[in-house]
Length: 96
Image 1 (tube, helix red, strand yellow):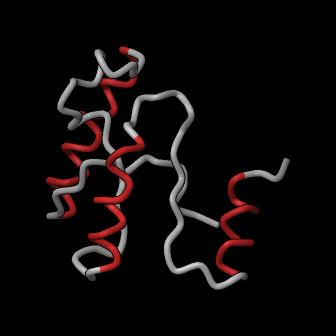
Image 2 (cartoon, rainbow, N blue to C red):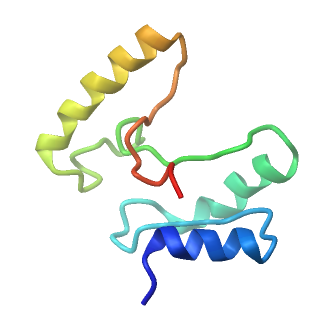
């Protein structure tokens, strides 16, 4: 099995316009994919990221380890310093 970064590169090389990656741990509901993709197709966004921090069910209830809640503190300060309002800065999927 290829590593995710290699799979992304293959998708780009084959001309993919939209790539959907979802973890198989059921922390994200795959039923929302069609809605998120529609924002991309209509040009409202360039990237859509799921966020366990801003989850309707809540981070911990959604299965996020308690230690990761400290990540939200980093996200808060990164938003303050950058002037952005992003829900996620640490996905690990940003580089190829």
